[in-house]
Length: 484
Figure (cartoon, helix red, strand yellow):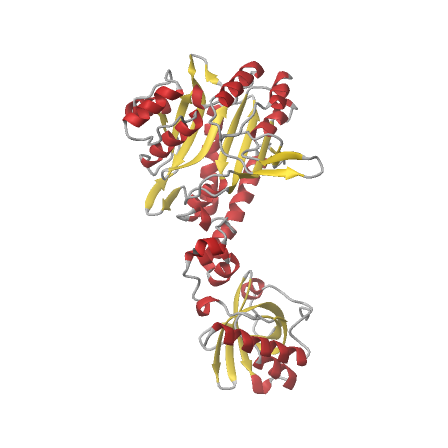
């Protein structure tokens, strides 16, 4: 049957329901309970009120069996129309898969032991005009899954489980940090200058103030202002935005955890990161041994460490003394940087990091001690000003965390900002954050800062291959453009 014909039939049934006094604005029967609670304390013969969506319907003459689902579970309905009141039987004749009902009835178990509710009364809460996809077998078209996530979740318990686990992961992160004395805060998502991290910003305009604004790339500089204010342990689970390419690991809108602790350094952040990841793995997966896309991963601590300077010297011939032009020429000589034009330090760093990901093992690896020229916000090592106290964490070949011993010298910070702006290409936007430098001039304690990509973390803990599989509504092309 063609979709348009199905829709017309369902509209006719809706009209029939309205004529019977149901189907548009019914209220849930009083005393409604969740299906999971009924199944957990199942008592044959007791009468209950439920509500949910019909996801399957099997008819045998005057007897029908239906599956009713709410957010907590599924139960079977047994319907014998000859035993129903006349009006209720007529309502039932107009019920389809995907309709949302409230029902009353008595509990019993079938001869096969299936928990079942014998229907005595029903009301239609919402008449579905369109059918569920592929008769409840799930959406097969990946693009459609992302565009119509609500159908994806209705159609697949596995997809639903991923997003329930995502919520649980975020809750556990909060519990973990709260228990260690961290304070959750919120900082602005609109900034008057682009900055806070490397990346191309989204731009908007404030009509009342008549000023350009930028969606934040990261909340880092505002969170460190709070260290100046005397809030020694803060974190934010933040939405950030980068106006750049998309991939299985990148989405323009993404979620980060950023943590800052006064009187700490990147060694403390290494310990915090290990403790958090192990806690999440044990809590969410029940073990610190994981499998991600067929790769076995052990989170047993301590995790492996490698230094950035040693890796890039061996792979690219690059050293900390090299300026951006020399780094670029060495990358080009090795066949890594195809673009012959000038590249900024952050762009060069992106090329290096992309290549590093390809050579990573599945188990966690801390890449430590980055070139200072690539770390404008990190404190240098005492014995070598060309190297900064920074690490990036890779698991299963993905960068999932980044941390510094935070630079708290206002004069040095201002100089680095100015050098960074000079290094930009013509089409890039970034400014010296004078207000942040002003805050540092009032004194910021030494601190460790940590950023963890929540989306990639969820990918690891739920074994999902793409970042779009863990974001409820990922950004997609305009549908007409995508079809073209």
